[in-house]
Image 1 (cartoon, one colour):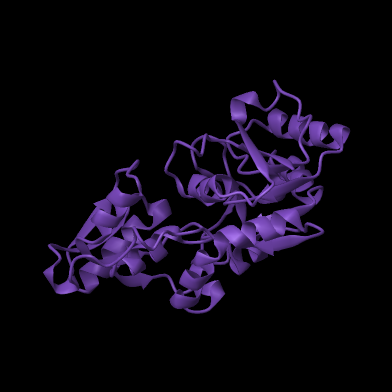
Image 2: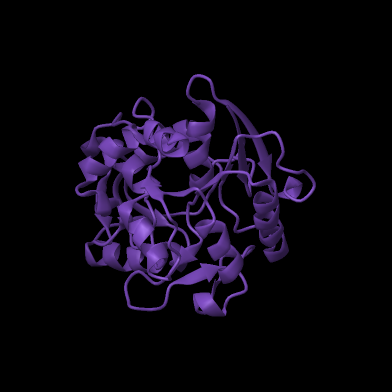
Length: 283
């Protein structure tokens, strides 16, 4: 069986959460499955011929016309495909504001979903899929809330390598108190406010591009992680990684990671993520 992975970044060489969600599955196909890869600049240049199935990853950085063309090609070629989503719809997770799309390039929150140019082609991309892969039970609810209802869906979280993400430095010997993510969209202001109220010094994590080993080393130098994003969370990979490295969590209570149950339930789910992914794709 030949399967093509299609994503808006080259997930074989980038370190973002969306890319890692697919990389582990791509690198560990079941016996008898041959995988190939394309990313955004090749979407319209190459027909999707010769594949038994296509895995369509994130499409946020595709133009609207590219998404429309992709749907058209998949329809014309009658190619079965799975939509494997990481985010797309974001909102203020603390209030009752409308679910919204991000713009393709700069992460700004824009408009209500049905007023957005991305809504209809994205809805078609989801609802025409053989099935949609979501990262968590809450992730699935986010999409159903704006009437994007695929005929079939399955949950497959993100695999986390426990041989890398583990508690190495004793908590009481760690040199730094706490960290949060950079930017209010990612919860910087709220993280700072809560840390200050707790009398804890906090560092703002602004750098990008660390590999898994680098991130594990980073987590092992901190005692607390404050995570209160303004966006609607769909999974929470950093929360699980930090937890496995012995960091104490202070996170928003309706975080997507808790839709699995407890934090340990989410960890257990992550260990089955590759199998869950391929079981969902090959059903």
